Amino acid sequence: MSSREEVGGSMEPSRDLIGLSSEPLSIERVYSSAVSPSCGAVALFIGTTREHFEGRRVIRLEYEAYEPMVKSELSAVCRDIRSRWPMVKHICIQHRLGLVPVAEASVAIAISSPHRCEAQEAVGYCINALKASAPIWKKVIKSVCVWCVWCGVVCGVWRHSRIAFE
Image (tube, rainbow, N blue to C red; front, side, top):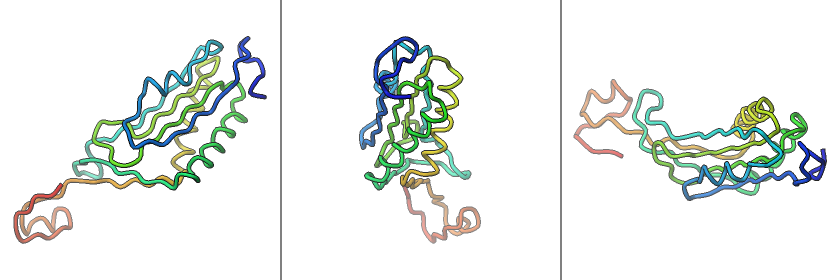
């Protein structure tokens, strides 16, 4: 479907918005960028930093990316979404870089279509394709046990004194 073809009676062009940011993501901005008068559905996915990973407390995540390739890979994901779900109108993919504290969004995706089924399926596909193809690397900063010799048995880190870690 060309970007100017009618979808639900609207001649509004379709758009793909891809962004990387070291600032907190605006979920409202992501959502607003996908809204269309021709669509009855906007599906959202928001990935956040959770407080535990592999049984340990998480302090924050740290993301790095090869930015030129990320944009190229995510553009390919958008094209693939449009070929699988031709009624999709707008796609917005935003990913955070740098430090992301617990409970903050690291990725936000919004996709609009005339009906919910296509939008929901496309969002699920999008996050899986992003994780599989985009050169974005995540470092999990976890808390470290601070109790002496027994620490080696519990978490694999030997410390002979009480040292506070991030």
